[in-house]
Length: 152
Image (cartoon, rainbow, N blue to C red; front, side, top):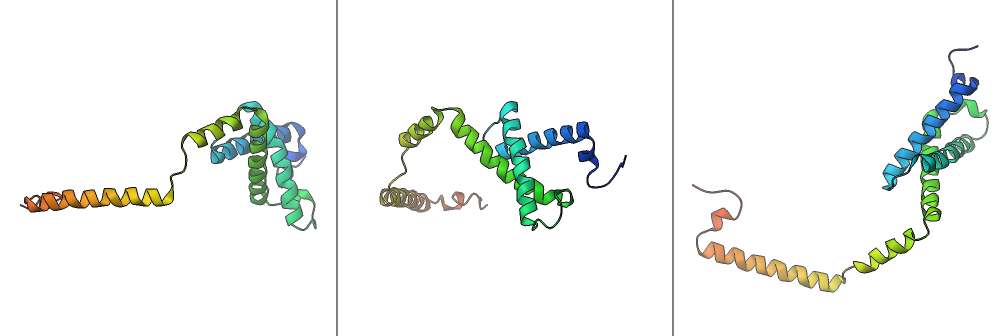
């Protein structure tokens, strides 16, 4: 039995399976963290294993399918697996909880996007008021306190 080389862990079934499980869970956790969602163990495994398989498939197809899948570079596999895991995690989140999408929509309608012209007018009004307060302070000799520094 070989103890080194690219297929070392995949040659031993128990170690290869354990390594794949750990890699799939880590990929799902990192992908969930990047997406801003919390994946439980079951969903992490459900998203991680297909993501890892799709990542290997994507790296192999990008490599040109000239060599066997054992000669693929791990960074390419991990990047492809991370993207695939993130896509699968999003699908699981959308399919998993039916009322979740409606809750997100109701939150969006509760805080509407401000009208751009009205927002500019409000911002200009605040700026005019700050300018008035600054002029009043300068007129009464308090301008040295406005910049955060005291002359003295």
